[in-house]
Image 1 (cartoon, rainbow, N blue to C red):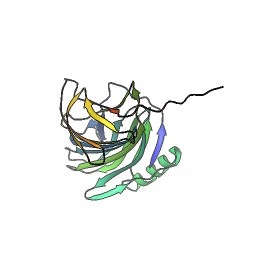
Image 2: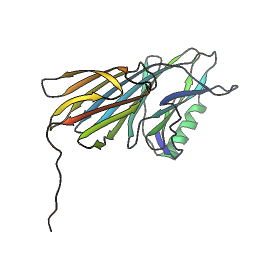
Image 3: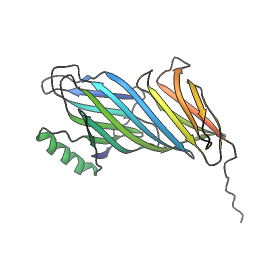
Length: 228
C-alpha cells in the first residue's frame, strides 16, 4: 500500500531506521542488523533495491515505522516485507484509500504494510506486527534519473551501516570510461558487453554514511541546438 504525505526529510535523520512502538511503551529504534543495496544504472537512470534487516529485541509485539532517505528526485516503485519466510509484496493505492485499508487490516491484527512518501526522496514504511525477537526484513525498490556534474554522471546515496553490502552495475549506450568514488574504495570489473560492475569496499573518509560514485561516458553527451 503506498501513499504520499508532506513532512520534510531532515539531514540529521538517519539514512534508514525502524522505530517500534508497543501498546504500552515508548517508541524505540530497532537495531539494524544488515543492509544491502543493488543498483543498476542504465544510461543515467538508476534503479536500486534496498534490503534491510532489523531485530525486535523486546518481549513485546510492536508496530514499526520504517524510514528510508533515498535522495532528491527518487520515487519508490515497489516494496515488500517478510513475515517469517513469507514474502508479502505491497500494493499501491492513493493516500486516503491506503490509510483506510491500513487501519482496517491492523484492526484485524493482520500485517498490511503501508509505504508513504514523506518528503523529497524520503519514504516511510509502516508494518504490523513485529513479533518478539523477530528479525524483520524489508525491501524497497526506487528509481531516479542521475544528475550530471560537468562531463560526469554521479550516483550518491546515504547508507545505514558502514559495512553495507553495495553492488553497482553501470551500462551506457555511449560507453563507460570507468567508475570512481571519492568516498569509498571500489572493486571494479568490466564485462564483455561494455558494462561495469563495482563492489563497494571500505570508506576512504570518516563520513561513512554517504556513498558517491561517478563515471564518464566515452562519447560526449548529445546537445540540442535550435536555429531560427
